[in-house]
Length: 305
Image (cartoon, rainbow, N blue to C red; front, side, top):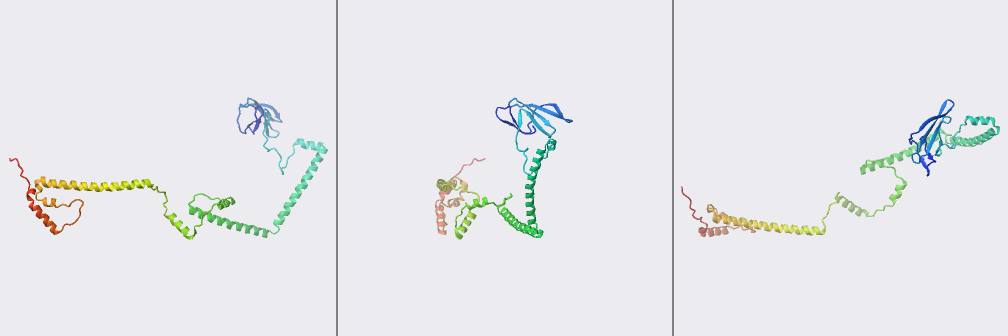
């Protein structure tokens, strides 16, 4: 489709966009001088209607002749300031019709007067601005210098902000909307001391949040710790008692530990940590000597060879 069209066969207005392809029947329907005129006939699948488009060599365009009409987009309208070229038929009609030629001349004179006034205004404005070229150039260079300083200042501020915030993107210039929105934000006045305290707290605060245990978790963890400590003490006492009983049993039952009985019996008591004096050690040795009968190993029968 060379341009968008409205299908007149569809029950509701349906537009067919530019570039939509159809399987069309092509045939020659005439000539414009030596240029053939072709007809393209196609079927709209939505409604089943037929659409026919023909070439227009005279105006170098396409014309819808059946089943549709061209969509008016305003491109064919003459805008202000555009010059419309007359066709051969219009020139011939102006040559043969004096009244038509007079009307055209009057319209052209009216349009020329309007254009002349506008041209004169433009010339006066140009002469006023460029009467003194040096002064005009000086004004332009001065304004450009001021704008350049502002641009360089804003660029330095932007680059500094990007470096402080580690931003890897381009920042747009500040607008009035940004200033208005920033004015809505209110910050509390902490004073000099308050601001220092806030800074210290902010620096001391960890970067990542730490999950602090609740009161219930703290109480349960405290009880568990106490319970574990008590269990450890009881376990140590049981282990010390077991070692003591094992050593005493070996001292009584093992005949080869008779010479070492003094060292076994003099072991420290569990749970009591104190250093014996010299007198206590001598008394202990005397008691062991008096009970030597208990410490003597029993007789053991050995099978003789």
